[in-house]
Image 1 (cartoon, rainbow, N blue to C red):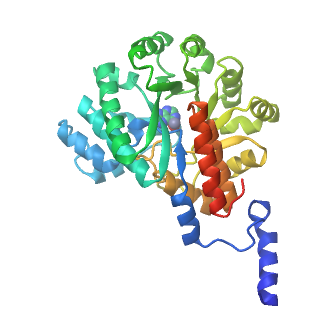
Image 2: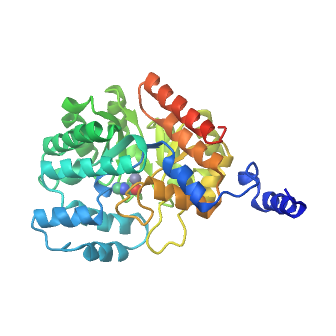
Image 3: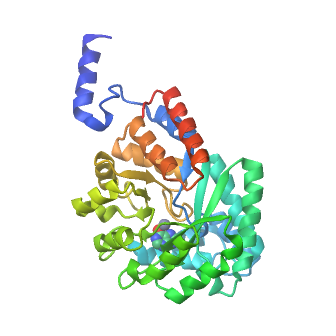
Amino acid sequence: MTYSIKIKNILCVLLLGTATAQYPIAQSRDEMFQFISEMPKAELHVHLEGTMSPQTIVKLANRNGYSFFNNVEDVFESLENRAPGLGGFLQHHDKQVSVIQTENDFYTLTYDFLKNCFENNIVYVEFFFDPQIHSERGIAFESVLEGILKGKKAGEKNFNIKSNLIMCANREKSIESAMEILEKAKPYKNYIVGIGLDNGPENGNPPVKFTSFYQEAKRQGYYLTIHNDVDEANSVEHIWQAIDILKVDRLDHSINAIEDLSLVEEINNREIYIAASPVQRRRDPVPQDIGRIKFMLDHGMNVSLHSDDPGEFESGYLTKLLFNFQQAGHFSKRDMARFMLNAFKATWLEQADKDAYIKSFKKWAKENGVRI
Ligand code: HPA
Ligand code: ZN
């Protein structure tokens, strides 16, 4: 190594700071892309209804006689015209959900999603589904589940991907309606590993509204998680309620926790995992929340990264999301592997299966030059 290259490397370390300090020689984009795309992945925060590509949306809209999504440009236009924030997101989301009508549509959706997982090297996935947004449109709970389970079975067989379901209640709907879906889910208990809470608005619909739903779900043996979307009203208070009153095992989004260091400490003490989703919308210059997620990682929080609604965001499916996040935030290979190790640790698998995934992931990381 020549003297000038040595100096350049030292400068590089000083400039890039601690996150990349162990890797004084900058990784090329191609090398990093290869590392991230080959990384075995666990996806824990993804909504089945939000996985539809514009092509699938148009296919289902045509199949079911809807005229508002005649071609992919119509879908892009609707995505582009969304207002910012959760409210704007849900506007488009509800419209695209309406094209899903039959058991066979749920099969198509699930199968296409697992194919996508395969292409992203996802080896294990826990995915959300929202029965209430379908039952209110007259689609029976059983049709939703039977379609999903057929898609899951075919996907597992063809792509060798293990998956489990998380059933979400909608926070704007009543507690009685949430209790009803718990009852309806009883015959499918073996396939549903946990319950969650999503949709909105969060303002006026605090976690405590669903205390009895969470207590009953726990009693029935489900794991518990909850959305606390980013920068929503009363976010910090809602996260406290989620861990203290609902006693959740995991938190979705919940990035505003860093505004209260005693909350950060409590989440860490209780070893609660956080499934974050640094998505990027079409006009966003970079993925959201890079700085806040770096803070979480640096403060020992068990945070992992996920795609949320990959069909509806520019960030897309997991490999692309991770790569763009890494590039924009200058994260090291080790950082990216730590995010993914957190995901495997956060899974709701039997302990022996979880241990096997963790062991195999650590082996992969070591073979790829990363100690975690
Ligand atoms: N937040 C709330 N509701 C949702 C989301 C989300 O990220 N995705 C689909 N429904
Ligand atoms: Zn979500």
